[in-house]
Image (cartoon, rainbow, N blue to C red; front, side, top):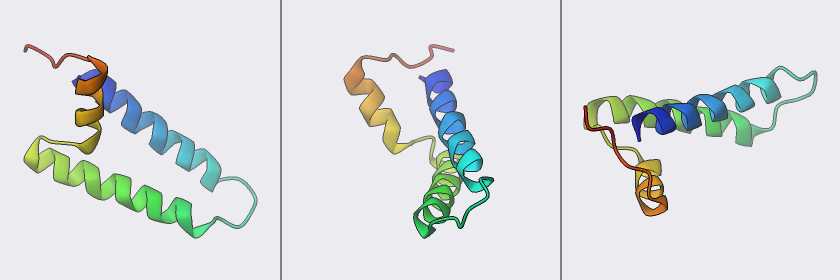
Length: 66
């Protein structure tokens, strides 16, 4: 679960970054989305919970047994 969660987060942030560097005016949605992602990652560091984890559990992805 942890690796998939990190992969998803990194992939989405990379996608937003690539959209941000295009030579056009950046829509407010992308700025708000990357802000949401950053705030979500910060709260996840303290609470050890992320909304995407609920979706992954329903998909059958198991958590790490470390």
